[in-house]
Length: 184
Image (cartoon, rainbow, N blue to C red; front, side, top):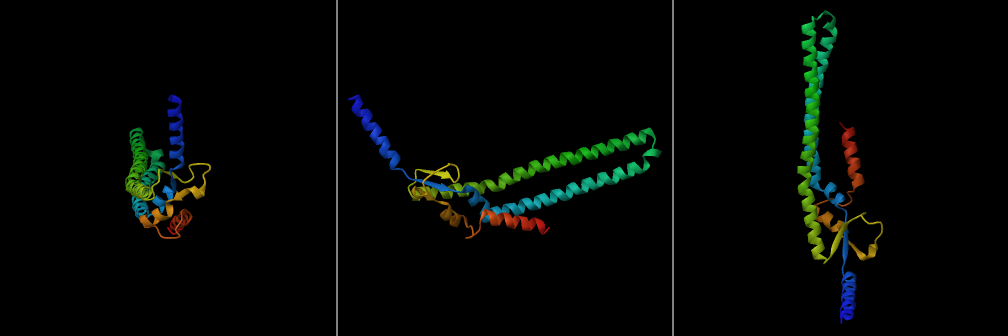
């Protein structure tokens, strides 16, 4: 009896594995090419430019005071020299702290801006998986081999749902971003 149940269970498991269908998706493509990602990058660029200007102003202040220090150092009394060096060190420390804080702030902003886009993409993929009765959807490129004919590619339909222009690719996005950098 046990042997019969074991054989029946193994047969059932084999049938259930072969009866499942799978899909794949390129989440990076969906997120990075979405119109929302373009808006997020524009906001991050504005924040970065504002921070860069503030940083440059702080560096200019330091350089100006350092030049004045260099010109007059030979005539300073010990107390004046020590005070000016302390002031320079404090400015330098503020510049370094500002830089570290801005990097952290920009990283947090990027996460906050892109998180809803990832959630939207995940929701669309889940809806498509349910629509096609897929058991599992995996990230494109995450397996060294799979039979393309046996896998449903959700990326094209998900691209449409995300509002991504037809023909826009990660490579064209890279070219857009490089052109933007060179146009500055």
